[in-house]
Length: 271
View (tube, helix red, strand yellow):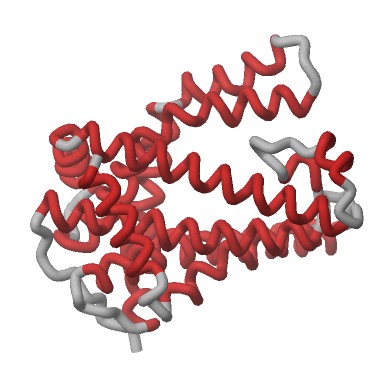
């Protein structure tokens, strides 16, 4: 337990010592705000093109956020801070392999995803309760959160292929299963607690601090209660920014301690 607390404390400390990483982390907030105003698919050809352009932009921003944050945190943890250009080049270099791992993971977990789609609909409950069931069903997957970051860190360190990287990451995770699985669950619970707190705060402010209004809030997934509410989207987006940097920092520290990693591979910028 002492080791888990150490990872969380040190991860929280270095979260606020990093600067450039917040630019890449902010892309998640940009995506959330963009989705609020995204035009739905319609028959008008001009709107279709705009919708496709928006989808492409979301993919680009998502890649910058997902890979860029992890690269910058990894470099910072290794006492080898990277520049904006290094992080941007790393996104381009490792995007294919990260996408390949994501598709492979989705394929492996497809039976679980199918269960998530079918089970809530087979239960005669309200839509909000069905959403809560889906959220709770995702909790077991948080046990394996470390594998995701470890795999990407392996790419940064060794520039290896997908198969070799996944094998190394699984071996490292399996060797320290108890601590890493606990960290994954704790981080998810912390995120859900802060998300619920943001929902409570938004409801109270918008209702003039009417406590009765809280009865309509879905605490497990507040976004269901707010829909396209801009204030909540901003608050929740900021929480996601902090959580991404924090959780990545925690797992970067664990990777460094358990793996004795080498200095990160610095990517040459394309002129």
